[in-house]
Amino acid sequence: CALWTPLPDDTPVNRNGAPYGGKVGDWRPACVAAVEGVEPRGFFEANFTPNRVVAVGGEARLTAYFFPVVPASHVQAPGFSEPLLPRPADMVTVDLAAFAGRLADGALAGTPATLTGQLVGAHVVPYPERAQIMAGGQPAQAFAWAHPADVYKLQVQGSGRLRFADGSPDICAAFAAQNGMKWRSALGQLNASGVLPANPHGLWAAMRDYFAAHPVAARAALDADPSYVFFQAASPSTCGKGAGGAVLGAKGSLAIDPRFHAYGALIFVAGPPDSAFPR
Image (cartoon, rainbow, N blue to C red):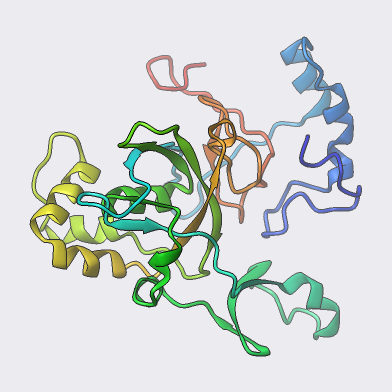
């Protein structure tokens, strides 16, 4: 509600194609009614109509948001060899919806609401892939350094807390931008190839072990994922912002696919008594 309140009533809550979500004006009565101390059941029954979410054509995934805390360094050092880079100055975002009125009806059907590109002279071209970014000398712009597996974990999750080895105060590595390339899990590819050593602490720990034993192969393994996430340093109090712009609450936030669910729209989850979500 805090994010929607300043917006005009006709602003779509979700511009990514979700079949529901409505406009900001549709949510104002519920936002006004959502005051501290309101009786929850009556509030939800008075302001919302429940719809059952059913998987069609495959298994649905219920995914929580993981907020990593990773060791970091202010400078490049042994064990801290991967940079955390800020959003580049040559990166631009193109709002495709703004051009819809100049094109034939349906010309933008099926396309994302925005595209990320690189400004080269007077032209916008696709932003480089991970391998090109890392080979381009941009690590000089890094605001922190961490283990390659930890930086990749932060990029997969979107944000996290940096705990510095020298004891200086923690900072938040907050999501700043993504290069517009489709994500292809480097960890998933390593796991499928069978090269990861067994580790009782899970796949991320196994990735660290593999990178330690094969430092040259580590770069190639990461570069197999063309997607790249840039960060910005922020206060730890703002850590854990989701793609919708809101700070995510522990035990109250889920990762969603914006093609099917609107950022900020509510989800009620109930399961059997012995599940993580008992009724």
